[in-house]
Length: 285
Length: 259
Image (tube, rainbow over all chains, first blue to last red; front, side):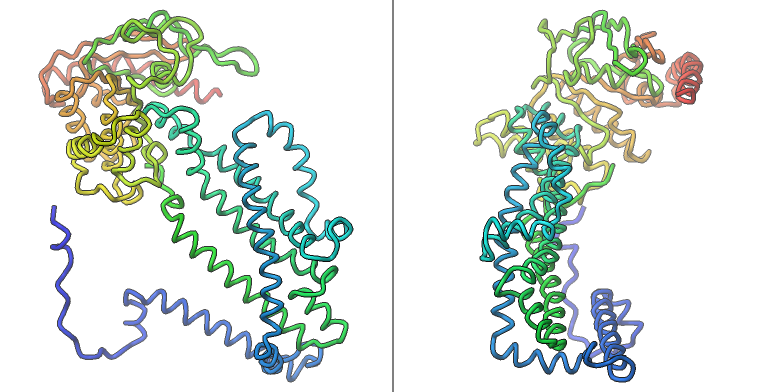
């Protein structure tokens, strides 16, 4: 057909600044992205305005402090670095538990997916254990590991491990038989099929599992810190609650929202950077 | 390739299901051999046994005098669903390289081999693309290149072009025929399309509907290629096969409905 250079039009001469109409914006190439950003901002702005109005005129501002108050409380907490100290402590706990839980989960998931007898032996145990949420394990974790870092690592690990195992095993099982047979025909032995075909085929499942586990880690670190810690976001919540500082509670809650969102975005960005080629699904034909 | 008195049964809840019974056929080297039959006639099962993916319950498959017991490097299977047969995380050239790597072909030869076969299927300008960026026909051509690169003696093809649109399909037929004529490989081609079988094959084995499927009749297509469906001899053969197949198609439908 044509070579690459022919497909690209020469750069157009500088045009006069166009007059922007909303319609043109929507139709422009970056339009959908810009539109999404615009709508998200609008959505948040409206929510904050309604919240401000409600807590000023209808609800007791002590119970639901208005956003302006919350921001006023947040500023000194940010300036003094207090909030960052708590955030980083919680984050380290989440990351240590999440990474070790994911690694062990992938390892076990791969083995369970591959070795039938191992799955048959361990599955009943896991079927029962996975109902023990990290929250349910807090008390025993504190007895086992004390209120230090180890008990938090353990709880996050606990929550991550089962989710990643189940997803990895499913991914290994669902590696298309066709693809394995194709590799076999081409001359791959069983080990090569496993390493070069089955595991790459399972990557999207593993990533999905890890993403769910990441969300669950954020859910479980808070109760763990509320019940048994002397630092971290959860501890900040608990301390503020004892002192009835609803402003500070709201700062902590907003921080959790923001942190979860940012971490998920970073996770997606990393996956896109490192694993894109494994994430592309090819349709049936 | 010789198939002698082949039988294949599957264990089911009530009683064993006899998929194939008494299949006898000899496929000559370099032949283009079609297995034709309605769905449920066991033609894919037979192909899987030839590939060595499934064992026969009794009877034997021998290739060059040796019994086929597993997937062998001399017989490469080509699948209809290129999406799951290709490695979507590998680029076009990496897909071809996969076979060379696992067959321990010396690294120095890779580049030439990849170049040769990608050019043969007209994909050499798309080497760095990924399967998801290719059209259906291009994916099937990549499958052909990947299979040929490991230099098998037999290509086993399971309704390879069934999912393509009519035009792409016709193009794939001529690509396949050209390659077959150039390389002299043996091709065993499964299809339920009478026209496709006549256009391509040296011989067409018509399979009866299961249970206990077998090869009911073998037609020799002694006509020069490229063949034209409107040619009187081709049309005559078409009607002959169609008439024979008709009751089986009806039976196949009834069997499906009864399940």
